[in-house]
Length: 282
Image 1 (cartoon, one colour):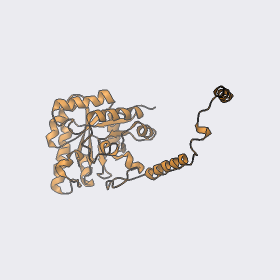
Image 2 (tube, one colour):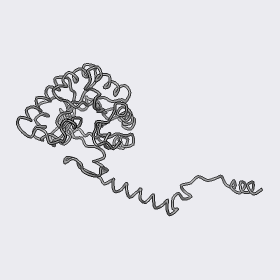
Image 3 (cartoon, one colour):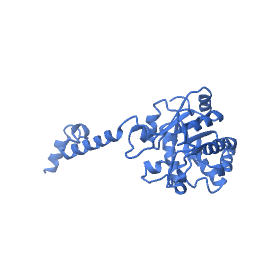
Image 4 (spheres, helix red, strand yellow):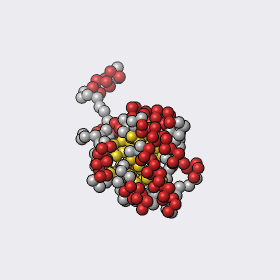
């Protein structure tokens, strides 16, 4: 185990133009594997509602669920910088609720930062959580929790008007106290401008190569996601096929009585089975 990565390390990486590598994952086993690489940050995203629970949006993720899986990831990767996603309705109701729920991630799950999807209306929320001593990542651009209002997502900041609005929003969030920005599904040119204008680390999620860092979902990186994936996602493995093949082989082994064999079974001590049979035959 090395030294725990902190926000100071991420700020230093930005200033030295060293890319920050982040992965979104939701479980202890995957986090433990990630911790054995040079990845610096893990985000426990509310996309777990889709990839772990099978819902068609992030909205059903609850605080209790998110706290539980964030704590699991923390146990798997205790030295990586850990960001927890504030789920739908965990921060929109009031500043007090936002602080309380953000605090749960810190005290119960070991998170170092919370992520909040924001519009200009969330300025006071970001400020309140930040003023409470909790580091905040403001999520701008495409905001999955707004799916019920938008209906369908499309790339953000593709016009001058949209670009100016997003740049202004980014700067407002930093002024409010955001310690980092995540920009999703945004024109690469605009994401680069925001990165250069803001002093905090800026992470790209499908927003081009010129932010301070990049994030992808572990399932997409591993090739576990079957069906449509975002344009910006890239697979570095084909574990879906490998997993299906492994389960299929296991199934055949069981059906053909090839598994379990003697090597994968427990046995009585030498001579004990003979004694048992003699007793049973009396």
